[in-house]
Image (cartoon, rainbow, N blue to C red; front, side, top):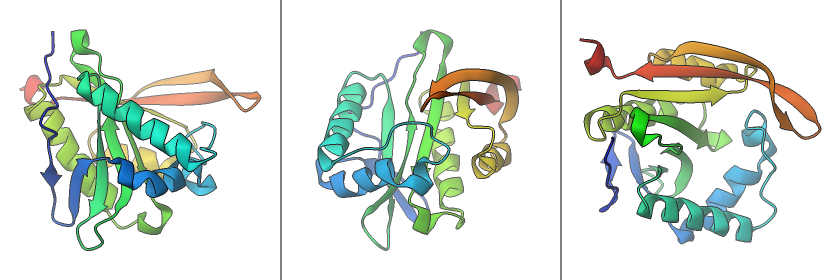
Length: 186
């Protein structure tokens, strides 16, 4: 079975980004990311209603990290020193050496290659340090930007589920993409 330990929290740097632990001081930014209509367009979840909702979310991801059940990095632009998004391995299935990746980025910073930069490093960490065998992503089929990002990083489409998700009074489709550790196929 996969064994992970997220203490101390693994800080990761890229050319433009610091991937760090999300803190309570990030509540305003987290609230924006969890309530902005544009960001939530393809996430199919109810928007956060208050800063308290953001604080509850931060507490929840911190507790999950403390139990080594998931890990969420805050994406900080080095030049601005503030949270602009998150990227996580949020559903860790240890007996299968598999996790699900999730990510959001402030609309102001989309289309600049920042999530690509973050994803490459997080996948490297997942495969090399965590010893994951595979990573999956569950995507709204209309989210072409997310699908392009996944494909650019080597993910392949595994499944298309018709109306398997009920949200906001309607049944929605889902697409599953996955990436097997490139080292395990050699």
